[in-house]
Image (cartoon, rainbow, N blue to C red; front, side, top):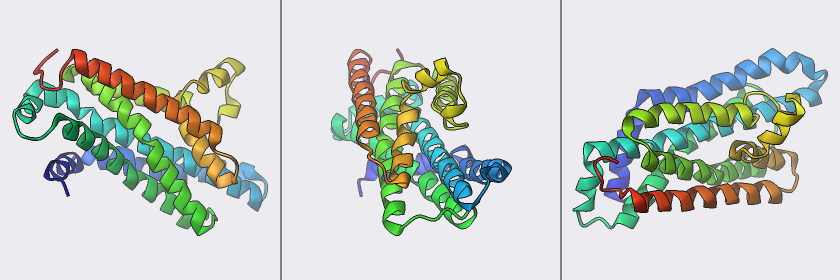
Length: 247
């Protein structure tokens, strides 16, 4: 495995806040929300639908937070001069960016797996093995959209602003994208706004997999957001090179 990738994974993996906010907290929310509102389901089938929907939302929430949090360190690396050091090493710049993408994607995976296990063994969500594997796989692939967004923010902002910006951004994506409560509960205007959130389409991909429905529209929407964030990150990176110590 690439030594730079291993090094970056160890840096982020030692962060206890990462483990709490992106793995443990979504798992606890999955249990709490399901148990609190599960009594309104009416019957076993209704409870299954509710538990599966909450599980998918919390999988998306955890992976989204992990992807953003893992890549926001770019702003700190720019300020500390670490990216300048990488610039003068033989490591190609494309490989540095590829490692950032890989780190963000890999750190999104634990949340997806843990929340799925909680959904299955604590809340009793029943899905076929193929559906479970597909659900984790598509949400893992979809997390790249938020890796790209995190890289964009990390390149755009200085380290003092980046952390707060990521916190606000993650909260907005979760709230407005329907990850904390169903979009169906939103007023009409907010329901329309939700469809402009990448987090909404991210969760929709998972819900469609669980329901056995077509995922074409959510996948296309999420791919569009990924391309948009990626292009913007490249443009910002061109104007503010990765080796710059400050903006």
